[in-house]
Length: 365
Image 1 (cartoon, rainbow, N blue to C red):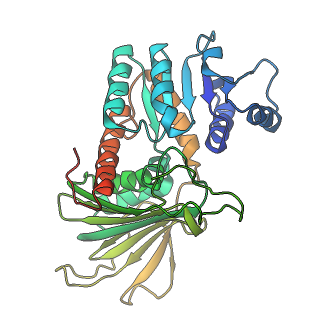
Image 2 (tube, one colour):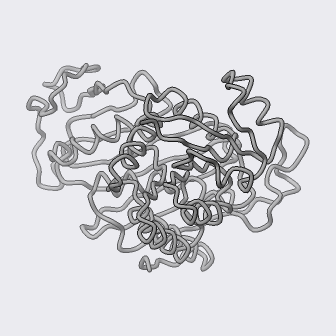
Image 3 (cartoon, rainbow, N blue to C red):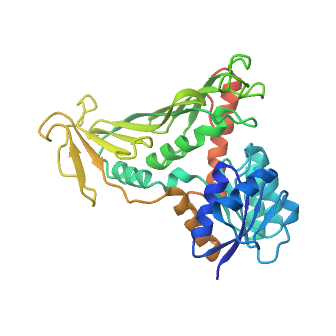
């Protein structure tokens, strides 16, 4: 039986959800909701939607739609709590774009509501479904990097700029989720500093200010400290001329680099390292099941790089497939359940407090 789905939000991410659910054999898109009629018209033309498809401008127009079983929410972050609450109260399973909510109490409330309604609350942490993240986790768990020393990430671009959340809430959750997954730990201390650029100086295409909301940090630097002493440093900005999506973990025997902006070589393992941590360089055969392409100097040199082969798969397609499976079995996904997202919101909330306090280190609470 196909699962009837409504997609709320026909913007950049909503369009991707619509495409994936239209193409999935186990789902049937019954409605698309967006307050912008032009967006609805564009979606209808792009996908040549059947005339029976409901295109609505408000959730209330379809909340009691016959055959509707699940709702996918891809709207501004400030609306997630209200829409997810309404959908769960109607008895629908819910897929919601990150972040689940903008504060910890609302996130916990949504989890409790989903449990009460016996419905799945699934948060779209897309990167946790990326083949590179899967492969990277295997490498780290097999201790191929030796003793882990530190990590760093850059997530920057020039627009889009959000008007309801700052760069921290818009961007940081992806890298925090990856670090937590790779390390199988959560931070015991966090710190954030940031800058709000003068709006009179921030121009889009030389015309209009792109961030109208006052007080939202455009540039944020994050430090995460984990129980074993590992530290991760994250650079976040939505006003950089160059787009970066890069995350690195450095160990005593090698370095793992996930660079989404390098489609031909998204995951690189650079083997070889210093003996300062007490480990010796290891040039043994890779323990990974799939073969790798080696580039650069031969393995007899101090360091060499492997471009790791990855399974060809669209992360969002895997998200949609897992969500549908969770709905069919009514079982949660460990990495993307509401409960898992609550821990990320806890970290983000504490980082926001640190940001307000000028970078004071805090314990997530």
